[in-house]
Image 1 (cartoon, one colour):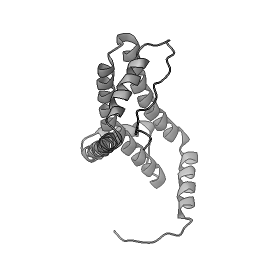
Image 2 (cartoon, helix red, strand yellow):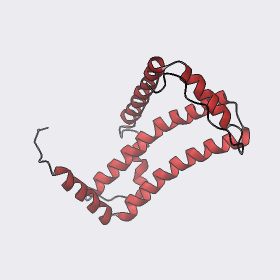
Image 3 (cartoon, one colour):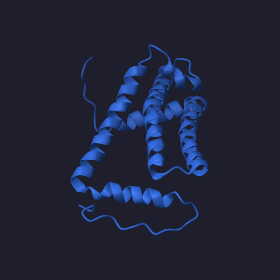
Image 4 (cartoon, helix red, strand yellow):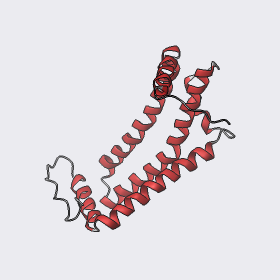
Length: 169
């Protein structure tokens, strides 16, 4: 691998090449993008359905949301990797189809690296939230659980409680 420098306007040429790929293969790219969005919408719909049908406790709701976030942290990197590979194949002139979005799920296509990257990013996110929790104030967790408990009763308009002291810091 060799290092080379690019000018300040290199980003424009990359953007133009990306737009050209979109114009050359609109069905493939929009189809794959639509499948990706469909997955995200289905996860949100499952979460809303569980909240409406089962009306879990705030702790149960938080646990279910955490499980869906973990599932998303495993599957989203695979879909992102598949989409980037699909765009690369389209740019290089190889034959592509929208279902190539799921090629990253097959063995030998780097799925483990993509999943580990997604989980590492999730771990960094959790560490960042814990850092905020332990530096900003301990009352923030109790305040959040109180706000979640207020949202469990749909149709009831309740004013949010004020942030705990020290949260603005």
